Amino acid sequence: MDAVDGRPVLVWVEAIGGIVVAWAGPYRFAGDWWDDRRFARDDFDVATTDGSLLRLHFDRLARRWFADGVYD
Image (tube, rainbow, N blue to C red; front, side):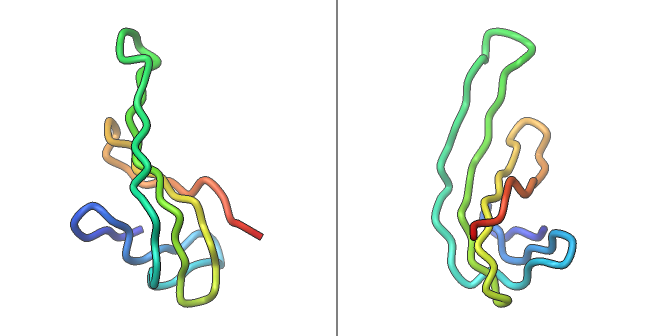
């Protein structure tokens, strides 16, 4: 996944993806800051040029992108 200014612009997950043509987010989540299970992430819903609708998140602690799922 590629990002510009903190938003995804290109997504490839196995055989799904393409250039991001629309997105919603970030939806910011954080918690458990008081112990080792802490998390901080930004979720995005994106539409790509191949017609895919995906849920992605950026782990702000690990500084990595993840694909959480594909909408039907």
